[in-house]
Amino acid sequence: MVESDDKPSYGREWEHGPREACGVFGIYAPGEDVARLTFYGLFALQHRGQESAGIATSSGGTIHIHTGMGLAAQVFDEPTLGRLQGNMSIGHTRYSTTGSSRLINAQPLLANGPAGSVAVAHNGNLVNSTNLRHELEDVGVRFATSTDTEAIAQALVRAPGATWLERIAATMRRMRGSYSLAILTPDALYAVRDPIGNRPLCVGKVRDGWVVASESCALDLIGAQFLREIEPGEILQIDDQGVTSVQAETAPRSAFCIFEYTYIARPDSVLHRQLVYTARQEMGAQLAREHPVEADLVIGVPDTARAAGLGYAQEAGIPYAEGLVQNRYVGRTFINPDQNLREAGVRVKFNPLPEVIRGKRLVVVDDSIVRGTTTSHVVSLLRQAGAREVHMRITTPAIIHPCYYGVDMATHSELIAARLEVSEVSRFIGADSLAYLSLDGLIRSIGLPEDRLCTACLTGDYPIPVQLELSKLALEVS
Image (cartoon, rainbow, N blue to C red; front, side):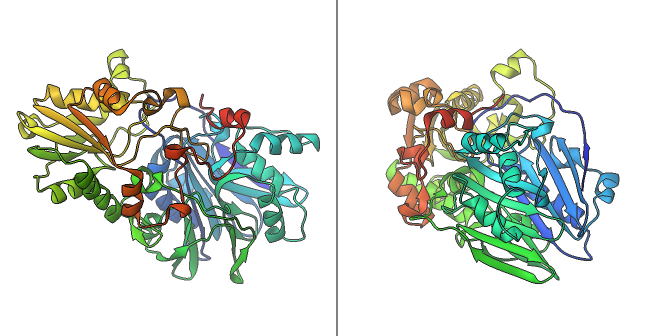
């Protein structure tokens, strides 16, 4: 049985820059307030998705669920959390990749079928979701949403096998693409990672319970001990018997998203035994070695480029300063700004400090350039505040291919670096100079071999083949 308590949908706020992946969280902890702990886990993962949030709980019978549009703090209150009873829970913060930003697509998503009830929270993007949906429709499944997550859930409750472990393994053999999953059945919590390990997923211990999350920062917030990352192709079953691990699928290579290091993950998270903050500092230092410039100050565009900015400054021997202040309360207000702010939405997010940057030659370190519009607004703000020169330094190499695995980097025609040379991009954004970190420099900064990373958005080398029609579907955002 499934109970659902949904709120009305709202409109979408303006957006700029690359849009994040989603965040998943799960906990099995008898005797604990699992809904509240999940809420705090989602709070820590809020940077991964701000469109919707949801929590599902279970205690061996009914699966209870509550989803809503907006930030976790907007979706949940004390009465709502009080109704979500159980000894295990999963949660999700969403940014839409496949499937539009509407309440009906909020996760966790629930499905009922021959095998029973299941709730699924998904980070990633299937590139064969259309085929999977058609196969399910051919056997009579009627879909309520436009997401690939519903296809996963519907496949699970119809998969062959005597146990959920067997059904999950059978479903993994049908899926192609990127997926880190938290799955809730009436009796157990499951964590699943795709065979190439494209998206992060880790496991930790909290008192007498177990926790899984997209990033280790979510474990820190609830006082859980980080144990390890879930391996590519691994399934974890967590129930009253403890933790069972099954290596369900293997792939010739792993392909962890390189953008997790440069942009998506929080700097206090650990990926492949390395603190993200340290990796970003080294990216900045490597940028300074590859692309030095005479300047008076280095600033990092908040928040993701602060560590890289500091690394650049330390390596170059140039003072570091905060030249831009970020409005931390922008979030998703569901209020459309007026036309002036719609044309230059970055003003809502950043405010320059004229007293710090007036008359100075600036090195401005940022994590990426996608369409170029956000960067041009940043440069314009700094010039209006009195900067004498603005030299942009970017920790991600030029993005020239779209991502089909869960990060919206626009279509090929919208990617500015796919259309223009570096000097032309520099003129477009209004900078005195522009330089990107090399791919070799980025890989050295991360410390993983290139054949363990997904660099498709930089090189066009997709670890999983993508059909054109499915590629277009994967970028649907409406």
